[in-house]
Amino acid sequence: MNTPLDRRRFLALGGGTAAAALTASHWASASTDTPVHSGPVPDGVFRLGVASGDPLPDRVVLWTRLAPQPLALDGLGGMPDRRVPVQWQVSRDESFTQVVRAGATMADPADAHSVHVDVAGLEPARWYYYRFRSGSELSPVGRTRTAPAPGAAVNRLNFAFASCQNYPAGYYTAHANLAREDLDVAFHLGDYIYEGGGQSKLGRGHVPNHEIRSLADYRVRHAQYRTDDNLQAVHAAFPWVVTWDDHEVENNWAGDDSDPDSPVEEFLARRASAFKAYWEHMPIRANRAPHGPHMTLYRGFTFGALATFNVLDTRQYRSDQVACKQADCADAFDPARTMLGDEQEAWLFARLRESRTRWNVLAQQVPLFEDPNVGQPSDKWEGYRASRARLLDVFAEERVGNPVVLTGDVHKNFAADLKLDWDDPAAPAVGSEFVGTSISSGGDGTSVTRYDPDPANPHIKFENSGDRGYVRLSMSDVELRADYRVVDTVERPESGVRTLASFRVEAGTPGIRRG
Image (cartoon, rainbow, N blue to C red; front, side, top):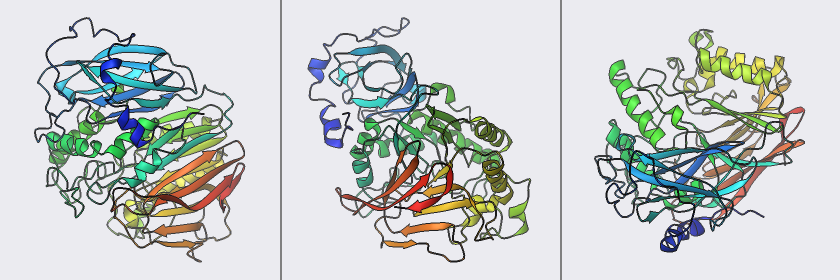
């Protein structure tokens, strides 16, 4: 049985056997235009760990960034101003006696010495181990998995999603436990970093200690988050598929609009810096690197005949939020307003109509279900009612196979049915939504859990506030099961985890059931 790389094992694999490992075969020579020994490599270049992501049936992205001084305020990570060779290996076993792919690339100072290797020629639905080498330095070992082949029968898919990991607000005890779960893939739905200068009673204050705006600042902030041992361990345990929300740039930004308003040119310059630093620190393919303030982050993944995942960007293309915070004014119903933008919406609707998989999952940022008590509704899909109605119409009219929405953002847990008519308690469900709480944002709170909490909104099946954690899901041809996993605390370095509540969706029968 394949078991996840837990935090302690991941850290142990990082350096204790480096000297012996460097003598292993199959290390590729560097690129032909640059010699391997182009200058000394500083000690400790792999302090930000490793990651993998965006798995396809025959390939996966491997990531690392060379940064011996991650918090250097110039954002350069203590690296020399030159390209540095980095070698990589992929093996069927963690001892690297069965290396199947190896190669070399250059870490460029223009990209903060980050590395994005798109390893092709792999077998579908298979676990692999990977590592990097630069100079005499050897990285920790990561574990990754390819997606099943198109149309292949998949008995079960285990995955999870997480969001909102404010560094000063708490330790990443949720990530420590998530790293131990038996998963095929994980999704991060946004607020990977926070842009403010908040400090912390826990000694985890933001660096720099002001709101970040420049490329150097965004690089340092991402690097600070990546220094966390638990975050490194969870990235090394399985592949991740990531998307952003607002705090990767600025709170509640919408399209070209800043909040509060600032000149468009000024905001787009800030957005360009934020996008570049985000790509530099994520296991995303090189062909998705941003062009100035533009980056195409929405994308799709298919796992055999079982599931299609559509990963959305609900920030970059949306109309500005309506002025009425409760989203009950006429502007919220304007059909010209959009959450996804024309191109992304057309892409999504085409994929939903054409999909032949058993399940169709949207991995996205803000709540889709109707609830006037969820945070600031004007920032959620409630502020874009015509856009939401178009999506739900596709769910219903195109008979999309078992649509499920995964959501973050609000630092609470919810489970809700999705309907065409929110005002009719008897209206049938056309899909299901699972909303997950934060990894750490909000810190420890008073746990309050309610089932069927609002008689006026019977589509809401579950609400929980005050807890931190993630949602673990298990999917088969027959049903989808969601376990809401919460930790005891984020204000101490270690914590246990428990399942607070479980729900299921039966294939072919829209709607969420408890148990």
